[in-house]
Length: 245
View 1 (tube, one colour):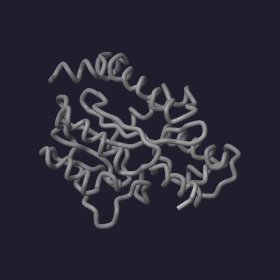
View 2 (cartoon, one colour):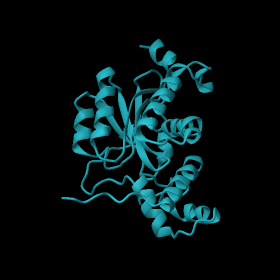
View 3 (cartoon, helix red, strand yellow):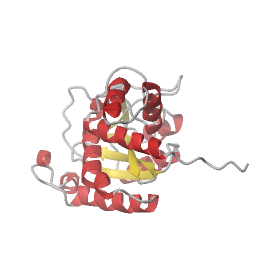
View 4 (spheres, helix red, strand yellow):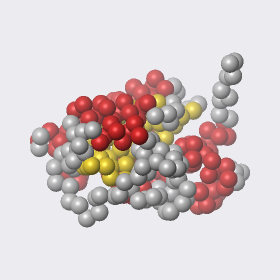
């Protein structure tokens, strides 16, 4: 009843923040390569600890194997529907994913729903744990604005849960799931995470959850409304998303 959570040690924070930087740059690194690189940076840590930290952070290298967000046994999985599919208009395909956001003295988790055609962030939510409610809040907000034809995710426990599946299925959207360990099936969201981290998170060194929320809100508004994308002919995601509604 009186248990007080033990804060992370400075070394744990240092290692997790380093894992995040390495994984953002090299998402194909599994725990073996990650351990080698972390040790090369002068941190004494074994592979077992790296595996545990990657699991707690919700990340895994792009290869078959154990996954931070691995599905719960017996949960529902769906095929990947997007191989060789040309995405031709807004709300054709959405992707959803979760990433680790570092703070100076801890971390948070960011979930985002991304329209793949326009790169528009339809909704997002931030939380200090990987519990289910913040994911459902982001999905509910996105589906309150529009409905995709296909909603893609990984096979993690959040996205194979009955609550998530029921929420998406009742809209009539088709559910697609990445091949196991294949984060690059969700390449557009992976690119979003790189932009968020290199252009905002790594530059700011957030002191608190409140500061992180404020910073990310400002950046994601900039990303949607003011940041030209080369792949969009230097238009903004919002301009492309709204032009085809």
